[in-house]
Image (tube, rainbow, N blue to C red):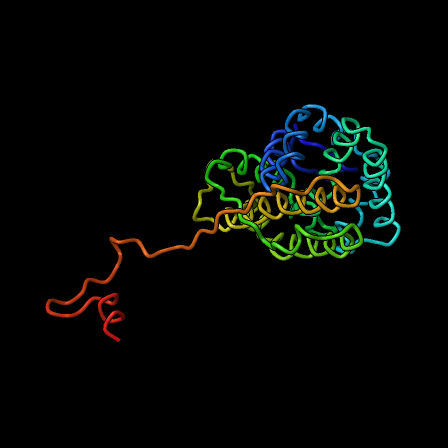
Length: 261
């Protein structure tokens, strides 16, 4: 199932929203992550009830590439409702409301929605989402900006605009790669070597980071527990052993040369 923001604008399918929800929880303090995990179904239902007028305003701004002050004010007010409920100690209701707000940063991180007023050819968005679903187990999630996870609520408008800006950078690649010579390209004919994979991986990670950063900023505003926040594992790519240049006979290895300096 593909969700519509307004008109012909498509957004992340429900299955991918569920995956984004689970991956974003990994960047949260343990207490908040557990509360959200216990209410996952309710949170996804809340996301599906994202206010239609706000969704329409967001869709217009996504196509134009600039979040308007009125849209930003409406987004802040929507997030603020979750904050107010949490401050009233209505934890279950507040957590569900907070979780459902994932829809805003997820859509801002979606290059399909940020393509511009012309949009993609019919069917391109569907094939793109199907490609992500089929390759989700191969897509690594990376932390884009550690500072974003420490934002206050007042920093969200600029951060949301930055999500949209980055989404637009490679959006056109999807249309070029999935619609060739006037024909739609089946997602099953696309693999990890395609630029589509690169765009999808960056977009998915951007959405995960955007959701977590938004949740944390609002949770911080509600004075929620921020202890026991996980530290993502740092992965440093290394040259495969099979591709390493062999050391000529009688020569010292690089490590040996360093040891003798």
